[in-house]
Length: 135
Image 1 (cartoon, helix red, strand yellow):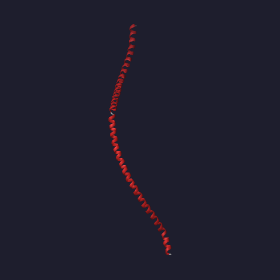
Image 2: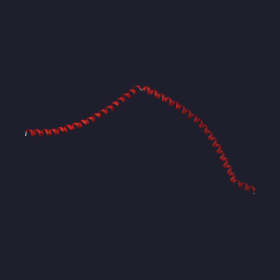
Image 3: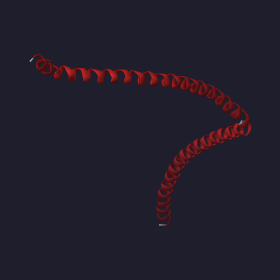
Image 4: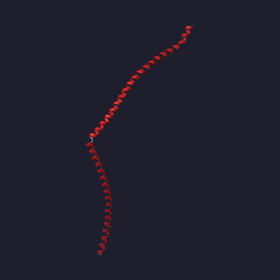
Protein backbone atom coordinates (compact mmCIF):
# COMPACT_ATOMS: atom_id res chain seq x y z
CA UNK A 1 0.00 0.00 0.00
CA UNK A 2 2.80 2.27 0.89
CA UNK A 3 4.62 1.52 -2.40
CA UNK A 4 1.45 2.16 -4.36
CA UNK A 5 0.97 5.59 -2.73
CA UNK A 6 4.61 6.43 -3.41
CA UNK A 7 4.24 5.38 -7.06
CA UNK A 8 1.08 7.50 -7.47
CA UNK A 9 2.84 10.45 -5.93
CA UNK A 10 5.86 10.00 -8.25
CA UNK A 11 3.61 9.83 -11.30
CA UNK A 12 1.76 13.05 -10.38
CA UNK A 13 4.99 14.93 -9.64
CA UNK A 14 6.49 13.58 -12.86
CA UNK A 15 3.56 15.07 -14.83
CA UNK A 16 3.97 18.37 -13.04
CA UNK A 17 7.73 18.37 -13.67
CA UNK A 18 7.11 17.62 -17.34
CA UNK A 19 4.77 20.62 -17.59
CA UNK A 20 7.26 22.81 -15.70
CA UNK A 21 10.08 21.71 -18.03
CA UNK A 22 7.98 22.49 -21.13
CA UNK A 23 7.11 25.92 -19.73
CA UNK A 24 10.76 26.57 -18.95
CA UNK A 25 11.84 25.53 -22.45
CA UNK A 26 9.17 27.79 -23.98
CA UNK A 27 10.29 30.70 -21.80
CA UNK A 28 13.90 30.04 -22.80
CA UNK A 29 12.92 30.19 -26.48
CA UNK A 30 11.16 33.48 -25.83
CA UNK A 31 14.17 34.65 -23.87
CA UNK A 32 16.44 33.94 -26.85
CA UNK A 33 14.15 36.00 -29.09
CA UNK A 34 14.16 38.76 -26.51
CA UNK A 35 17.98 38.71 -26.40
CA UNK A 36 18.11 39.07 -30.20
CA UNK A 37 15.68 41.97 -30.06
CA UNK A 38 17.67 43.62 -27.28
CA UNK A 39 20.92 43.21 -29.27
CA UNK A 40 19.27 44.81 -32.29
CA UNK A 41 17.98 47.75 -30.26
CA UNK A 42 21.39 48.27 -28.65
CA UNK A 43 23.01 48.32 -32.11
CA UNK A 44 20.48 50.82 -33.46
CA UNK A 45 20.72 53.09 -30.44
CA UNK A 46 24.50 52.79 -30.42
CA UNK A 47 24.75 53.60 -34.12
CA UNK A 48 22.38 56.50 -33.65
CA UNK A 49 24.34 57.77 -30.64
CA UNK A 50 27.62 57.50 -32.59
CA UNK A 51 26.06 59.36 -35.52
CA UNK A 52 24.72 62.09 -33.26
CA UNK A 53 28.06 62.45 -31.52
CA UNK A 54 29.85 62.85 -34.86
CA UNK A 55 27.29 65.36 -36.07
CA UNK A 56 27.55 67.33 -32.83
CA UNK A 57 31.33 67.38 -33.17
CA UNK A 58 31.06 68.69 -36.75
CA UNK A 59 28.66 71.39 -35.58
CA UNK A 60 31.11 72.41 -32.86
CA UNK A 61 33.99 72.54 -35.36
CA UNK A 62 31.96 73.70 -38.31
CA UNK A 63 30.85 77.32 -37.83
CA UNK A 64 33.93 78.62 -39.61
CA UNK A 65 33.51 76.13 -42.46
CA UNK A 66 29.79 76.89 -42.77
CA UNK A 67 30.38 80.65 -42.57
CA UNK A 68 33.03 80.45 -45.32
CA UNK A 69 30.71 78.39 -47.55
CA UNK A 70 27.86 80.84 -46.94
CA UNK A 71 30.09 83.82 -47.69
CA UNK A 72 31.31 82.21 -50.92
CA UNK A 73 27.73 81.53 -51.95
CA UNK A 74 26.67 85.10 -51.13
CA UNK A 75 29.58 86.50 -53.15
CA UNK A 76 28.69 84.40 -56.19
CA UNK A 77 24.99 85.33 -56.02
CA UNK A 78 25.93 89.00 -55.51
CA UNK A 79 27.90 88.86 -58.76
CA UNK A 80 24.97 87.27 -60.56
CA UNK A 81 22.55 89.82 -59.16
CA UNK A 82 24.87 92.64 -60.26
CA UNK A 83 24.88 91.25 -63.80
CA UNK A 84 21.09 90.87 -63.73
CA UNK A 85 20.67 94.46 -62.55
CA UNK A 86 22.95 95.76 -65.30
CA UNK A 87 21.01 93.77 -67.90
CA UNK A 88 17.75 95.12 -66.54
CA UNK A 89 19.01 98.71 -66.62
CA UNK A 90 20.18 98.23 -70.21
CA UNK A 91 16.84 96.74 -71.20
CA UNK A 92 15.05 99.66 -69.49
CA UNK A 93 17.11 102.13 -71.53
CA UNK A 94 16.18 100.25 -74.66
CA UNK A 95 12.58 100.18 -73.49
CA UNK A 96 12.57 103.98 -73.09
CA UNK A 97 13.89 104.39 -76.64
CA UNK A 98 11.27 101.93 -77.83
CA UNK A 99 8.51 103.93 -76.11
CA UNK A 100 9.65 107.13 -77.86
CA UNK A 101 9.65 105.34 -81.21
CA UNK A 102 6.19 103.91 -80.57
CA UNK A 103 4.83 107.36 -79.64
CA UNK A 104 6.21 108.77 -82.89
CA UNK A 105 4.68 105.96 -84.95
CA UNK A 106 1.32 106.39 -83.25
CA UNK A 107 1.38 110.17 -84.00
CA UNK A 108 2.27 109.55 -87.65
CA UNK A 109 -0.31 106.81 -88.08
CA UNK A 110 -2.90 108.83 -86.16
CA UNK A 111 -2.24 111.96 -88.24
CA UNK A 112 -2.33 109.85 -91.38
CA UNK A 113 -5.56 108.18 -90.29
CA UNK A 114 -7.14 111.56 -89.53
CA UNK A 115 -6.03 112.86 -92.94
CA UNK A 116 -7.38 109.77 -94.71
CA UNK A 117 -10.69 110.05 -92.88
CA UNK A 118 -11.07 113.67 -93.97
CA UNK A 119 -10.17 112.83 -97.55
CA UNK A 120 -12.61 109.92 -97.58
CA UNK A 121 -15.36 112.18 -96.27
CA UNK A 122 -14.66 114.72 -99.01
CA UNK A 123 -14.79 111.95 -101.63
CA UNK A 124 -18.15 110.82 -100.28
CA UNK A 125 -19.50 114.35 -100.34
CA UNK A 126 -17.65 115.22 -103.52
CA UNK A 127 -19.97 113.87 -106.24
CA UNK A 128 -22.81 116.08 -105.04
CA UNK A 129 -20.57 119.16 -104.93
CA UNK A 130 -19.21 118.42 -108.44
CA UNK A 131 -22.69 117.74 -109.80
CA UNK A 132 -23.99 121.07 -108.45
CA UNK A 133 -21.05 122.90 -109.88
CA UNK A 134 -21.77 121.50 -113.34
CA UNK A 135 -25.42 122.56 -113.32
